[in-house]
Amino acid sequence: MPVISINKKYLVSLFPESATQEEIMSHIEKFGCSIEAETADTINVEVSPNRPDLFGAVGLARSLKNFMHKSRKYSYSIKDGNTYLSIEVGRRVLKIRPFISAFVAMGTSFSDDSLADLINFTEKLCETYGRSRKKMAVGLHDLDKISGELTYDAYPDDKFVRLGGEGEEFFSEVIKNTEKGSKYSDIIENAEGLFPALKDSKGTISLIPILNSERTRTTTKTRNIFVDITGIDGETIDNAADLISTVLMDAGAEVRPVEISRGSKKKVTPQLRHRELFIQSRMAENEIGVRVGPQNIVSLGNKMGYEAAVVGNRIRFTVPPYRMDVFNEQDIIEDIAIGYGYDYIQPVPIPSSTAGQLDPRMVFFREASEAMLGLGFTESMSTFLSGEESNFADFRIGDYKETFGSDFDYVKLKNAKSQSITMMRTWIMPSLMKAIGASRHEAMPQRLFELDMVFWTERGKPVERNHLAAIYVDSKSNFNSIKAAAEAFLEWADLEMEVERADHSGFIEGRCAAIVWKGKKMGILGEMHPETLRNFGVEEPASAFEIDIDGVFEASRRPV
Image (tube, rainbow, N blue to C red; front, top):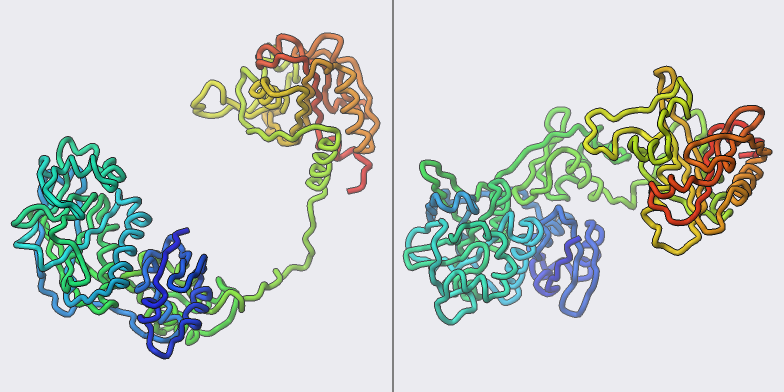
């Protein structure tokens, strides 16, 4: 979340005299921002990243004044529509940084605090909304130091006096030898020896998006400002032009437009676009969960900076040009909720004829996981996806129908992109073996378990079951150790385990058994075959069991 540092004295000066500093500070929190730190002179305010209009004292004061009913300014327009300057865009810059917007602000009057706030605001805007100047960057210039019309293009290496410099330097030297140059040089690294720049009749006023010239430096003596916004997205820079121009308007300046010419195409900026959105009052009330009525919704809209009015059976909201974050009705409804106050919105019980409760099967599975943890096993989580090699071949399974039954088949992935991920897993054991193989250099012993879903088809019909698998890897691991773990788990489930001799190619012959309950096979346990261990890169003996936990739940006499 962006944190902005604001001079408290300057912030208070933007309010009517009737607003006290304490009142302003308290409303910052109510408005949805957070005061992160405070000193005698400054406050650090955390604001939402989707509200770049709040990145400076002027924008924050504008919204707070509406919120506190200290202002009713909702619309912005340019009194004199005649363009003050024109910028010609060259062909070479179109492949590097093609878009530019600009405007002029006349009659500015800066103090040290107000100028610092404007510079900090544009810097924060470029770093966040402008993606560290890559998407959008802003330049501030003393208009009275600019001579003639402007040209924006990409140029071969040229000289100018950079901001803070004492003599002329080549563009390449500025990029190489300055902090800003090294920080933002990657933005234009593919410019093929050309450098985006803005020039007037006397030379370069900005090496874009690196540094402005010393000649057009903005100071507290500046009375007229020229603002350029460049970037790689036309909509972004036009939005930024609208936003910055409203900030300067609120600071007392008179904004004049600039004409941008790109060949035969021309546009005038800023555009100061106001949009209209319509909402039915019942829609807003249902979303927020309170009944406030159309007139109160209008009042709340005005409080949040919209010019709102009832039109027929709907409410019209005029979105000011600085609200770049408002895309649809939901954004306005969120603001209405902020204006109403989240503290006053109470939870409402969901109307229902029945009371909700946890699914008994899920409760059993959760308690089963806790039982395995109590037996000293660590829970593992893995994907449902697998491949024929790990699911079958690495367990020395040749004919999977011979192992799993003639009606069995596995679920294949359509258009699989990798040979290792081609199917849905049919059992969990391969997932645990892969996890052990990946951590074979860790200290022994290792005990892992996983309780989750497996998938296959029987006679063409899909089957989804939950299995529990556990593995014990150690030099002392054997059939009896894993049998003891399986017995302890089934004793927890209040089931008496029966075992029958079984053969499975992934386990050592004679050290493998089926887990049976009332004549039904529920799972398998045993010692891993050495070849299986090698296939998964496991260097220690391993024993494991896997059981149909759905079947255990259905048979268990344990209360849930």
